[in-house]
Length: 446
Image (cartoon, rainbow, N blue to C red; front, side, top):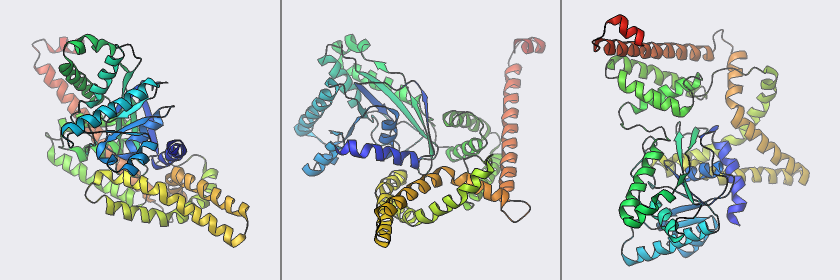
């Protein structure tokens, strides 16, 4: 009951928290039972994003330490959480508790329900898939064994790639993999269960790695993220997943060859993004002003009202988020979302109640509540476009900050493209030089 009540509000809050949730890849399964697996760089938000992908409700596998208290365990169960006990638990108690947990998951599959599990546990690195635990494969194969490998249960992998996982109004790409049929593992599992579990675990790891924007080294990671934001702002390079992969490949090639130039470009990128931030603009969003000028004029007072009304709770949330995430910066967005999920509704209810006390009218109170919700939604979705409209049409100087940003972005893009073309040309010349064929023959083959 609690899950059904909170689900629509949580998904609405999710769509307000993220400016873009892009779905790509295969179609999500239309019905269960499905064992959904996903990478886990963003704690609370990962589960909600996967939940938003499917048309049916999901159960969630969570670590057993959350269920030690009986009252808390009942609360989490009402939110459709099932415990799994990892290596931090030991002895016969762990084996017994996991047997019970596996039985709960099997019962869900029997009813056609679907379950989400994060095989790597919590991952603090958004650009790398950690080693998988074997629990996912054991659950899937043991359940199939109970049903003589005739169950329709499939595993569906989902890769989550965040543009900047710590930020409010971030963008995330949800890359859905093809469902994995488990019936082909029957003979191997019957012959050697342990090695088959490990093989399936490794295959799931490789599959999920291919669905995300994974970077295998920490070197130049910050530069990659900054260049991705620049290209996204200009609408170049495909989707975010393609931008991350292609940029990482290009950066790994050209930075060792021109380190001084790379450092200079990174400094200019820092300045560009800092200037965007100082103007309350998103450096990864478009700098194109809205075509419908009249609509922007109408939006200006609504967005200003929404900004004034929402600023006090927003500052409280940001202050608390910084306090709670001091040790674990990767959980910043999850803390911000969780706090906002409770603080913003309380703030809106307080204001609407105040309107009622002043006016003694329920209708007035409801109208205030609707106005708050609408202005907040418009603030989230149109703040950037209204700010761009202001800088283009209201800025008092002849040259606006928007013109400066566009010039800086254009120069950086031109320089990066020139480096890319030079690197590509050099690579082609190197390939030609290694060939024993005459030059004209090499050209004809190209």
